[in-house]
Length: 370
Image: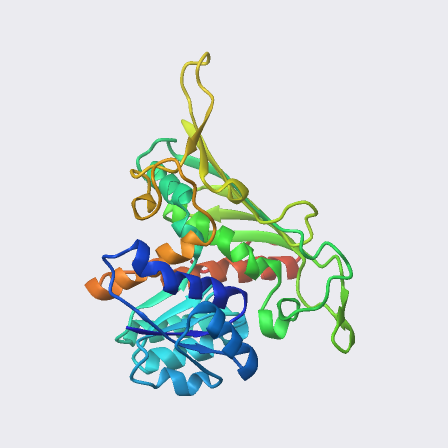
């Protein structure tokens, strides 16, 4: 199958790396051709294509999605373009992968869910952290009842790349292109992990947003930041789980720290992306011997590890995208369900918008619609 990636920057490079390597590590999947890399700047996209191994380039994504040599359209654009590109690709009969978040609003997500339901191609949402082996193992342990009934959860996703007030303006700091700030960028990952690990959705949320640096240097002078730098929320699920959420891009000293803690009636689980090969399991028992056990998730028996290195050898952030591509190709070949689905993206977006609504109402507990 021929693949086109729309976008050649950060996520475009990560996805390109996955398409280049997927057959080498997952030889059971259908072969792919890295057919076309798409970007607005012809010179820069040509250089990126040469660096990343693409056969050709284009500057018009509309022309690319209509071509017969393209079977998979991988959308790695800024968020405000996700819906337009994905809707057109689905209408053209392509299989579609969209990098998270699915879109910038609930309304756009709902339109994408409806389009995917009627389209002949498969539709996958790129929540790549579902392919972190330690988090996939955590999901298995929750389902096996290893920590009892989950009652509480703590989720945070902290970075510091905007902690310097002189850090320059980017599209991620403009609401018209990003949709929201850190809430959509990092909060979407954290909310999806809660849904993924528990197997249920957040139904109510209350929250607060904060922009610590209201202006930043732009290409033509000082610009107003129109999105949030940090957010806090309390989330409630239908079964009664209560979760705290904190996300920030101004948390000095934290580079890429997605942390997840689940507290059950007979144990707990703890994960930190900055130590992504480890999962800490605590199970209640004899007071003399009970306590946290760090599981090194590097064995062939662990999720996704058979495809990679000998036992005991760690994986990295980039491996998640290759495993994601393999899962997508298997689902296409077998006509089986994918995860995360566009419905999962809609569920996460409903939570994010409920947090924004709550903030505007002074922290009022708000229904998500899930």
